Length: 79
Image (cartoon, rainbow, N blue to C red):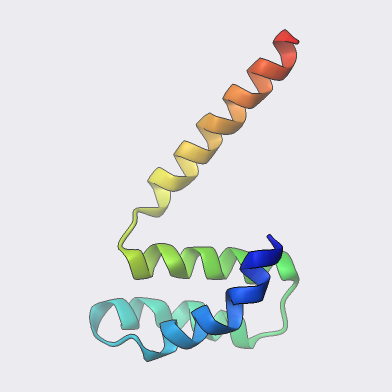
């Protein structure tokens, strides 16, 4: 997560320069970043912005993550 924090200012700059339909979708992410937020909220917004920027589906990523966490939990229980 430290690397994400390190690159956050640069990523936000890239998001701000993006135009078109993706740029319009990124505006709410940028507006949330302006507000005083916790580091977790900031990280969440940057990850969501990256997903929009790259054209990835948020739901698929979160489902993949949830499935991975369930697999890890299952493996831990077996040990």
